[in-house]
Image (cartoon, rainbow, N blue to C red; front, side):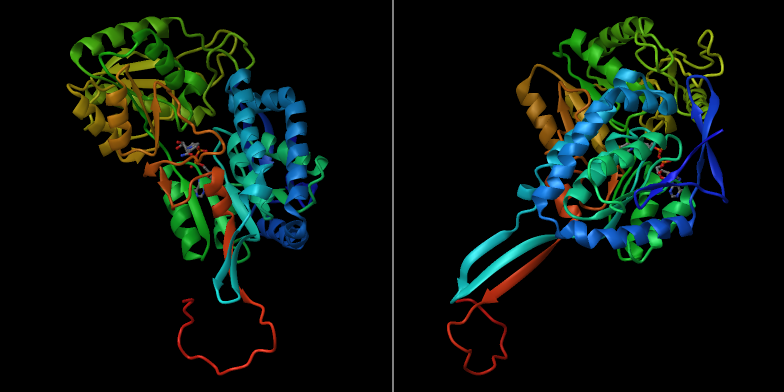
Length: 499
Ligand code: NAD
């Protein structure tokens, strides 16, 4: 059986002893590889390599660091087909979607290529008599990222591209469910001229995460995953003196006003609800039609569109979505569908027990649609993370603002309307971090920042963009005076003021 190694100090590192995890091919249901699950020793080996490499990397001028990122981008682009196929084989998303996963990460690498500009400090000439003040943004040192299974290329690149370009060394602990693409990215970083020890990959589960959170030489931790674990990572990392940003789960609503272009909205909602089998933190698993007429028309069109969906293996070029990541996750989704029925929601389309001919052992779930879901239901409150769309009918615009605003999660929300004033009002008032106006999946471009509100994010810094640069750097402010002759005079015992 193939073994997926760790990557420490520029080399593949096998794991002779200790626990291993299974890496499945979700389209066939087979175990295709094993991955070592690191404990504190391997995490520490990666930290020691990072500590050795980081000072020289930080001392390089920022253009040189940017040049490595340019070359890394070129290499990843050249390997796009290979990376997308590898990603699909472990995650299960269709290959075109895997290309999107790599591409959205590369856009953050492009942003990181601009680090000489982004990391520039500030300068005040003549802040006092003969006194200049300047601020520098210096790297933190060794930082770590812990990433989820659902974007094994994009989310690691959100983190390490910015961190490394700013002069840090990085320890990546990717999801143990699909670890191969993160490993390939680290190899390509070395091929691009990145020094050994600057990007290390340590695979693992909770023990590896705990070793990162408690390691005294790791200055900051970026996490993306489910909310309970995000809350734990935030609290534990902070208790150990680290800077932490921890993105959590989501339950995004798509609001459909009566004046929306229904043809376009339905296509957008179907893509955002079922694409990647619903395993996206910016998916739209809840749709909120305003008014009964909108609800009836929407339901009819959604059903018609669902009837045309093709679920297939990840390599099927005609499939709209593939299997979910593991059999355990499929069971969890199917249990939620059963719960929805018990809670009294109307199951309009049932995706349970879906079997794909010739791939009966694959982890497939058919498209599922619920109507008449209400906020009291657990299936509405929880993130299901599967191809399950829930219709929650709203009687008014006010109710449509209230539903996502009161939900415990606050990652993304979308509104479909032709009324600019209503959309503007909605965007201003809704209590959610990222808003789409006739855009179903409003993942911000790389030079803006990504982050939800409420239980969707813990900490105060978003991912990538200038917030990423701020997260991975600390400000040092220098107040300088160059006297013309030797300083004379008396000591001052009052705080200096620059009149
Ligand atoms: P997960 O929380 O199970 O795992 C995330 C990471 O935490 C993995 O690296 C995993 O190994 C580690 N981990 C798992 N259990 C742990 C534990 N008990 N203690 C410490 N670490 C642990 O998430 P997942 O299933 O891989 O990913 C899906 C989740 O991620 C969804 O909730 C989704 O909404 C969320 N997500 C959020 C965003 C965002 O930016 N807000 C983006 C993508 C995914």
